[in-house]
Amino acid sequence: MPSNDARENSRVQGAISEDAVTRKVDERVRQQLTKLSFLGPAGALLLAFLAYYHKDIIDSVVTYGGTTLRAKIDAEYKNHLATLSQTQDKLREGETRIASTRDIFIKEQDLFIERIARTRDEYAALKAEAEKAKDAAEKTKAETEKKTLELADAKTKVEELLKTLKEVSEASQSTRDRIVTAQSTTIAEVDLRYRELATKIAALQQAVVTDLKKGSLTSTTIEAVPVAQTTDTERKPTVYFQFAGFERTEAQAISNAIKKFGWTIPGEERTPAAVKTNEIRYNVENRAAAQQLEKDAQRSLRELNINIALRLRETKEAKSGFVEIWVYKP
Image (cartoon, rainbow, N blue to C red; front, side, top):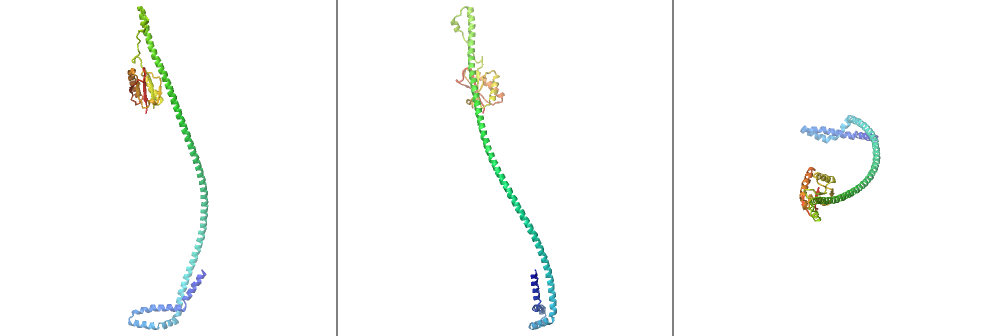
């Protein structure tokens, strides 16, 4: 700042030199003389006079009045210098404040940079931990997917095993049903033959008693004794029960309901042949029994809330003395 003061003082000293005073006096005289242009011809003559002799007049004014004017100008510039000095003091104070503010800013900047560096380090550490956690999560995910696949494979194998067991169970049950049905068929046939034989023996006994009373018993008479045949009205035929789509418990419920009407059902056989089949099959000799079975079976199904319509079907494949019922649940 001292260099600025020296330049300012030098500039002031130059401004108050004689040439400068002369110029200022000349300028002021000109300003005053311009006012005379409004005085008419007299003013014009005066202006012309002054224009011709203005140099001599100014020199005289500077010589005789320069001291006073110089003192006035010097006082004005001293005031200017005082004002300038005050301004310089304010500038110095401002520079001091700026320097202080700059120091504070630099300090805060250093602290801010330090915080940024610390935050960057913390972020780097957190990022490393996040990457580590991500790797662990991906590893866990891979292991979980592997276990899921293993469980799914095990589940599939278990389902296949259960399916196989069910098929084996159904096949075993079907085999059992067939055995029971075959046994029941044999028993029914034996029973039928037994009844026929018992009827024939009873007739022979009656004929023997009669002939003994008459005294005319011969072998020819015995062979000629009529044997009464068992008809549908005397004995209900055995019922073969075939089913598909139903659970075995459902099939047994239907069978038990029909048995309440006096029908003999040796067992229930699950068979694919019963799919989409709901009918009563019978031999022509058992038509009346089949018609009665159809009524009893429909009544049993209604009681069990099973909506199935049975139809009668006469077939030569049905054995005499037996009626077949076929039911299917979609």
